[in-house]
Image 1 (cartoon, helix red, strand yellow):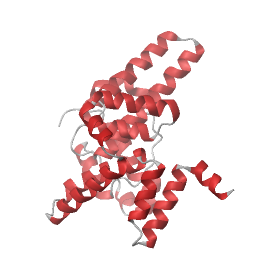
Image 2 (image 1 turned 180 degrees about the vertical axis):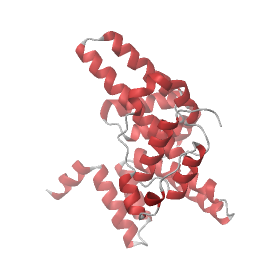
Image 3 (image 1 turned 90 degrees about the vertical axis):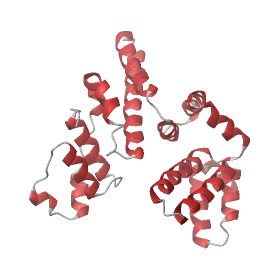
Length: 243
């Protein structure tokens, strides 16, 4: 195993477990990689207690300048799931963005360029999934700019996106997922499900949601859940309808 920043790996692993993104067994596997062990008295606690106590104040972005190359390297190791990698990279980038914005406001351009350069280094490593995570956490002008940057980096996927509606691509994913599940290819199906959810959560228009709700009429529960999600995504439209 290469020598990564073990403290950083442990921080993200614990917080990922705390946020229910990985299981206790997943956490133990990661800890085994960095030769870290929990005390027996802690391991014997209930899962709920362990998750609660595994929160670590995340100061990772504060130390990016110390290990930026290691950071970019270890997040691609196989024992971290894609959604954890995307979340971690996104949080680190947003921290850099906050710091360079603060520096610009205070007129400290040396610090501004320092944080801006760190953010650029992180952004250069972004996969499409990382961009989708960042877009999902952004609003307004920033969301538009990040979508434009993502499409510039992945132009072929942009062309595909423009040719069909988000709902149509969502249904195509559904067919591919079902086919993989029928073949017993669960890991591949899970990966496609994550991409499918990213389309629904980040790209659906109000019309796409309405088509999804109409398509789910055979299940009252699904109709209820999709309607709730749509109203959360478009709260202003919902308020206008109730007036």
